[in-house]
Image (cartoon, rainbow, N blue to C red; front, side):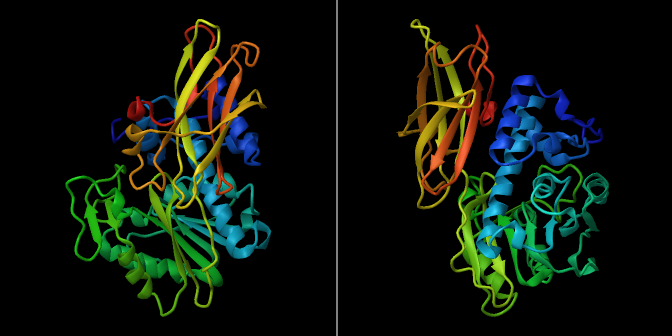
Length: 400
């Protein structure tokens, strides 16, 4: 895409009907109102969608829209676990701040969990904040390049900075960590995600202090001196947290956010996080379908568990919402491993067959991946009519 050109907004009404059905089903499974979620388009100025997600899915707007929804819900599920673990639930939490919120991916989730009067958003993209304020009715904060220039001094029970510290150079990492921790209420927490050393690109070496910064990113507008790609060790983050104050309670959750980012949670002074638990939802996708001479249709795909100590215990298959069979994914998939470096468990493969009696052409096929962590992931396909196959999975380019 031409960096100087703004894409048109993407309305969910433009999503192919089959994929639109996947989206609605997926949202309902997570107790979200599909109509409310889809009511606002994806703004054409959202670089994270139009210059990151969309190209990764070969500019297929429908599959990309599903992946946007999926990533929103996975982020929301991490947020839910955090709020339940620290406060006991959304009905017990006070004001929250989504820092580096972009064009409101998380806001689409939070506005269905909290009164908008409790939600504040902040970003260096001021037009994105203005759009969120107008669209969702949340409170907006215009951020700055230099944290010292940010005059905002609100206090929040949850301050989340997702996929921000994973892009900062070392000096700004420390400065923004201190600034955002100062915005946490007396009973609150700061949560932020990073790229761990486990996913440092091949050929790059971690610095002696446990920090490495590369001058590239998916953004076409932010200065690479303040927004690139950073990689850290747990020891580096631990020392950074120690600089905030003595004795702060904090936890690291490997692969706790998005596909490959670790999530760190730091409490306000006196807030004990030693019992906090947070897992990653299982991920997976369909890859192949074959119509057999018997008339059966065989589906195959993959799955990965990223929560340490957990494993995918079962995959249950549903046709138009009704369970028809279950299986235990067991076959290891080393070809998928490169997409999830450092995952808690090796990716696994699965396959199953559906007869014409079990599923008619055009039926929705949903696989529910069940982890013994208690979390579940989902992937979708359509029962094929002759020479058709529609699915929602990982990047078709990456896993073909």
